[in-house]
Structure formats: C-alpha cells, structure tokens
Image 1 (cartoon, helix red, strand yellow):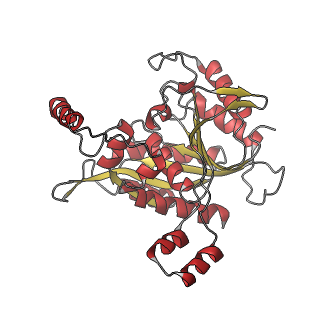
Image 2: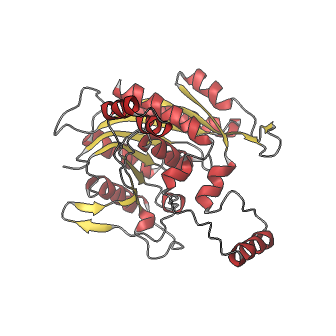
Image 3: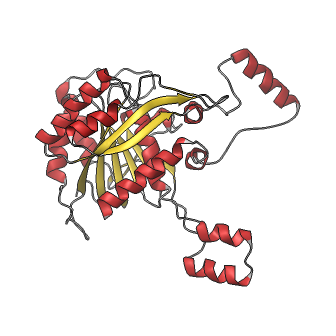
Length: 334
C-alpha cells in the first residue's frame, strides 16, 4: 500500500519563493525527532531541491529494495537510556547529577529524506521538465518510496500553486484521509494539514494569502503560519534589527482566521551549520585560511563528527522550533 507505515503528513507551503520553506522544513523535522518522533522529509521541489544540501548529504544516492526506493538516512533513532522507573531508582540510590541527566533523557526519533537531488548524476544538472513529467515524478515519490514506520512525513514544496501542488493534492487526497479518527493497523495516513511559511513584508504575505485559498479549495486543513526571517539579532551587541519589517505574518494569519505559530528571527548559527562552517569561521577566506593553518600546525582537528541533530540543539532557533513541534504534536495527537 502506498505510504504504508506513515501516520501523519504535513505539507510545508508558501506562495512566495525565498521565504525559507526548506530550512523551516528541516528545522521542524529535527525538532520533531528530538520529541521522539520518527520523521521523513519528502522534497518535491523538483527543479530546485535544497534538502540534500541542507542535511549535508549531496553525495548520497537512493537505494532500491523489494518494497521500493529507500530514503536516505540522516540519523537513526536513539533509544532512551533508562526508563522513568529505572532513573527514579538510580536517583534514590545515588542522587547524583549524572542520574538526573538520565532521568531527563528523551528518546530521539530517526530522520530520513527523499529528494530528486539524490537521483541526479551531478548536483549541477538542470531539471528541465514540463508539467506531465513533474506530475509523474511526484506520483512515483508518493507510491514507490518505502518509508517504514514513520510518525510524521513533512513535504517540502516549491513556491506558488503550480503543477507540483495540484499533483500532490490530488494524490494525497486519494492515498490519505483528513479524518482524525483514522488510526490502527492498516489505516490510511492522515493528511493533518499545511504549515504556511512567510516573511513579514507585504509582498510575501500577499502571496501566502493565495496559498491559504489553495488549501481551502483543495480541502487541506491549515495548521498554522510561521513568520520566518522576522528580525536579526546582532551576535555582538544583541540589538534586534527588523530586516523585512515585523509582524506581517501575524496580521495576515489573524485576518485569514489561521493559527499563528510564531516568529523565527534569522539564526546565524543555523546558517553556519548547514553551510558546513564552525561558529568561529567567517566569510573572509584569507582569515579562515590563516586560522586553519595555525590549527594544523598545532595538530588540532575541529571537525565535529556529531550527527546534525545534536549540533542543531546548540542553535538558538531550536527553542523556537521545539515550541512549534510541541504545538503541532498537541494539535494532531491530542
């Protein structure tokens, strides 16, 4: 059965390009895995796939199994180190700080990704397809990918309401249900709704209003609006500058009768994370080259081998998306 094992499907939509849909998709996926949920990310931006680059796996390739295409793993699930009862016993025995950490430990869900970027021979290859071929590719993504047991499938979409969106809506409404009562073994996946991403300025919010209308016409529920790039906090003095004004997404959500999930300022740490830079690196290549030379002479190796999800927890935007994840889980799972 297509989409077998998937419990909930969330679309990430925006009528405007360049508002950060892919970065919001990834951060929401990471935050959900840190709530113990197994997550899949399906990138259907066929002509401009960003997910392979963001997760640092541009060289990865899709493998084939008897059940279909196997998504690329970003990180595996990590079981809780001790149950609540075991942790409580440990605390009563020793009462140490180490055991308190065990008590607070949460299981981490897995994260897997599927994107056309993993199927290209070279990342610089252009995808020049007309509508029918795009539609066929999206149908194949929805029917021929084996996700296994997945709590949440996040679908990263291109901007606008183009062929990809129409094909996606048509297929999902056939392969899933919007009813919250669909549970149990063999039940259809639940199309829980769409998260809309905008930036504060009017030119973006006006296009996102059209996306709300698209959801209404296709009977896709709307989960909420995220106002991305809402201000920039200077890492030196802490002063907040509103690069694209502020509050436009909140006003739009209120006028359209849609839940406003919150604002996300520009996070320099997350930008450095997905660009593969350490926090000490700068955009000055000569300065970075000199620093690397000094580090090599000292025999130091600062390559961080931790999974992306563990490094993401150090980004201050994680707190924002942790809140979004908890809100959505509460809304969807009750």
